Length: 429
Image (cartoon, rainbow, N blue to C red; front, top):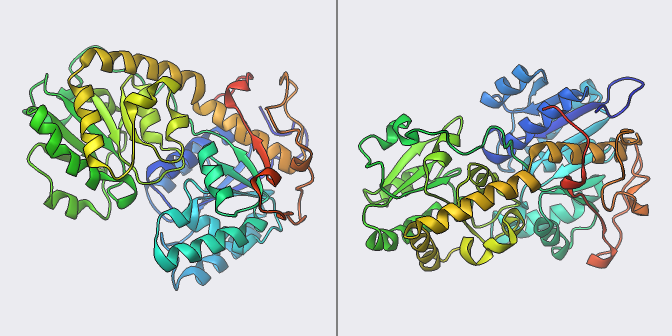
């Protein structure tokens, strides 16, 4: 499924500062699919394990020494990307998350078709004056994004309510359901050294995510005391590492295990009876999708993307308000005490991910955005365009043309909502 059957291969430059967690997995999945589709793919990111994985896939990787937060190094980082872009000469730039979205748009300034994918908005991650600065930047920087790709309709709506104007596409996150799948027969927990000595029947709750304020593990630890009062033999495993690790360990009871960062969280999902992600904000988290693909029920906070990632019938059982340890504890306790309900939710969760969040559909939807921006037609095998891509304002964002971001009301937004399940052509990833 090439973007064009004639002419040179389109050159795509991905920019990312996060080199772990969900953003890195999204970038890796897109790069894998785009290389298979015949694109010339370069990724600019800090040196890390991610650079090794991307190089092994066949991508060209360029070192971009960027820090996670804006600061005195920003000017140097922008200049570095300006030089790098001149050397790579991409046909399209795809900037992921806040820092790359900031530096990349400042470097390119709309001269090349630019896709910005926030993966959760920067102004939600901070408070006070910093939040105001971040919001002001997102409003102004939108003019240098030829298309803003959101991973959920809720994430798009948050941007619209914040006064960010632009051309939008909603492409839900996807995961590989062939990798994330129910456990084979046999004792899964036996292969996890962190669980040595744990009774095989002990109720096990797993939380996968970077140990940071966004992911809300501190709220989960507050709730956990109430859980173990009702389910004394329950155990909680926090999978991941991050800046809050030492503080969380200092306040964790003995029934909590810290597994650290792992290269593959699949065994932890398969070993769990329940997977919990108590985030304070998200775009659409990958961990619940991965857990559901493994046939596991989830409890997640009702932040951007959460409702859209779950089957509609899960709302009452699986969604809780953020920053509410009492409600979180009650929901986790209820599910731990009801194994039949957990099994039923897990079965439905797997079917939902297969139908709605297959990463191959996500990659095809992103390819459609690229085709639209580069002026190349969809593949001949398509039976019809995705919903909304024929909107008249979706055309005309070509090389070198400035983006019209006039108007602030939601009714005036140009929204291209991509439904990946409408894509039927085959794609090898």
